Image 1 (cartoon, rainbow, N blue to C red):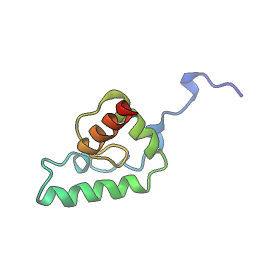
Image 2: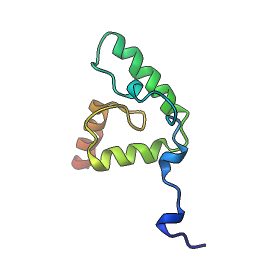
Image 3: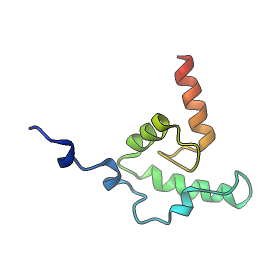
Length: 86
């Protein structure tokens, strides 16, 4: 079966974070109450059917902020460095 790009639903249609307050995924720091916020955002990602698509996108575009695919900006920087070193 052939699908044109217009016929294929974008992965974000299936994202578990749809309808969740976007601010949850953008903690203002990495300490204090933000630690709980990061864990809550990652819990949403943990049940997401398209988590790997989200992470792949964030790594490809170099997303510098927020929780994407269950990762923090520091975790994504580590993954990008590891990919370059491989």
